[in-house]
Image 1 (spheres, helix red, strand yellow):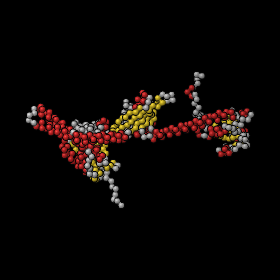
Image 2 (cartoon, one colour):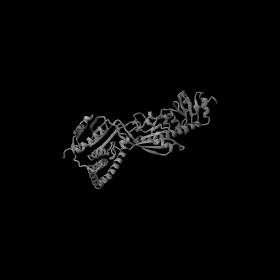
Image 3 (tube, helix red, strand yellow):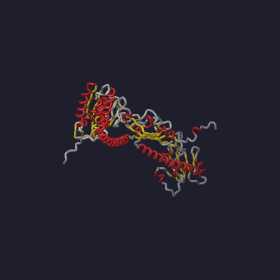
Image 4 (cartoon, helix red, strand yellow):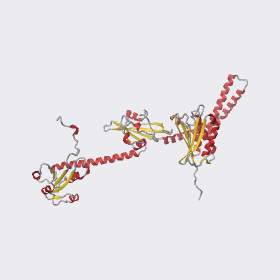
Length: 501
């Protein structure tokens, strides 16, 4: 007992050491079909040595022997003649069940020939049927697995199956394709090695503490959170992360499925809608301010100016009156900015040369800033179509964007204006190498009342965006803290619709 090798208990795979089996079948029976399947079906080759059916004998006269003819197996009227003609037979399967047949076989054959009688064949039938059932379930499982994998691979969200340590157990196709490595190279590695943004840049450098993976581990429930990322081009991205517990057969949590959903487009649309709603309120407030506040404000400003000029005031009181004048003027500037922002622009839309307008705006800004260490370079890529817009409005917008870029580079620098065709729009990229913005700055860049400038009201980029959208275009901003900012104006290209027939 002590010498028994339990490591190989139950291991019955064919190891290639047995000589091929040359089989002779005597008679027919209910197990014949199963026996032929075992001999000829390739599914059994993994478990058995090579088997060759040499001949068949003692077939009842009424039995159709065409099945043997079709496979080139000779049929004999007696097993004696079969053994005489095929001395290489080393396995006899006796299926007649006749009394004394087994004894006659043992007298006729030598000890190198193995014999199976009809009772032992029953076990082969059972094993054969179990093999067929196993094959059916394996095929069904493979189909279900293939179907599930196809469904997962067809989902555009990133899906990660993680163990409880955050290691990758499985991923769908879009994850490993975006990572640029074969799927098998990511299995067993920490999930942040596989997670990517839409442009292929790294999603995170470690298991992010805000990832709902941690909450699901603790709660055993579905969890979710919203995160923001800045991609390799400096564009702000919004992602909704979901985590789902995967339970084992006993109801215990064995894995966590994490899904990344890019909701950038939807979030920006919602933000734009919210901004439009806020602007509608601002418009109503501005009308109220114009009628109810401006007249009293002018009166206050007038009295304050009169007090400043009054000879009867002490110097201390005069300084206070000057503060009152300055604050009144500041309120008037704010009110004017708000009115200008919400008031619809009167635009004269026509075709124009965007390259010429950009160069004109650059020359204008160079006059004021060229001597202070700033230069502006304008470059067009390839043939550019005319754009539709109002030349004065567009020139003002470009000049304001250039001014923002210059103010972001207090030590001087170069502002690049690159123009290219982008689909059915012409894209004007205004790029600087200034201080840049972080994620919070990017989120609030187009807020009409947010500004990074001291004393400003934040209507710069918001106003530019409003005017460009009135021209039928759009504005995007990309930035990285300490690496500069790129503001892109997308303007509708003038279409050549041809002359009427």
